[in-house]
Amino acid sequence: MPGTGHTAPPADETFDVVVVGGGPAGATAAQELASKGRKVLLLDRAGRIKPCGGAIPPRLIRDYAIPDSQLVARATSARMVSPRSAHVDIPIENGFVGMVDRDQFDEWLRQRAATAGAVRRTGQFERIERDPDGMAVVHYQHRERLRPGEGVPARVRARTIIGADGAKSGVARQAVPGAENTRYVFAYHEIIAAPARPPAGYDGSRCDVWYQGSLSPDFYGWVFPHGNTLSVGTGSADKGFSLRNAVGRLREAAGLADAPTLRREGAPLPMKPLRRWDNGRDVVLAGDAAGVVAPASGEGIYYAMVGGSLAADAVDELLRSGDARALAGARRRFMRAHGKVFWVLGIMQRFWYSSDARRERFVSICRDKDVQQLTFESYMNKELVRRKPIAHVRIFLKDMAHLLGLARV
Image (cartoon, rainbow, N blue to C red; front, side):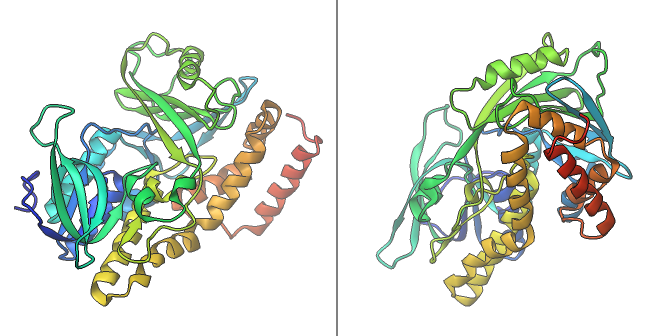
């Protein structure tokens, strides 16, 4: 029955939609389609927790009705740390950034999808084949109530498929042309216990972002509060860079070297949205599978859930109209709403993160109140702030002064 959790797989059952992947994108798509009366299978592999700082903006909390019970902390300020260890503290005025633990948050989203009517199964996606009538058949290893590593072959028929199975998506590589050409960065973090005796300068309501080449040659390190725990991590596209050693250095610098380590997680993250998200027939991608991790910030939860919603809308339109062109609408609508932000952030990351000298100037720029206000307004509401043109002019002039070396760091 819907909402009762897992079920044994009947042979050759047909679903309106098979959602592969139960992270924020897949769980959101499954919940929204099930709420519309579609017959949905949500297929997720067990034991998957993505390395993630866990920050969610007010726009996400509001749009997706996230209850307070899912917030393990509320960040009310951010600290940016430069290569010379100078820091800039930025208060989050008139609000907060919610912090979630992905192991709890993702499971809550999956359970919400089940409550809406989606069928949940645990298993590992293997491949898509076609029945003689042309309908997709999803093959997977069903693993429920079996020991780790064991599974039994299972298959279901699917009128449509949403590939939300993360970076290096198996669905994308099999069904969507060009997906195999995606470039990745690699993220790693450690979940540690919050210190019983906080080190000097510690603030459990503050997100610390470290812009130092020793912690990442092309990204940043982070220390994010999670209530009784902390996420300490970093990322890089440089395969020769030791993320684990960098996190060790970050913990030492933050006074957290002796805190108990509860778990370690690592995963690839896509560098930019794929050029195509659908196969023109019955498959569409969402979340990391579609490449929607924001450059510079690495933010993914909000964009994953938006992508899940758009994929759900596109699939519902296809099922209603029979017109497969509806699937392309998911990417088109996403890029119309967020493509410019991704473009700006991509340029910012390539320029400001390229050397410690530029990182030092970047952190210095962030002392400016105009920069702080416009940045946080854009982050909190997920829109580029177009009002206050005088503030944009002031920021432009200050940026040029830093670029030309005329401003003091």
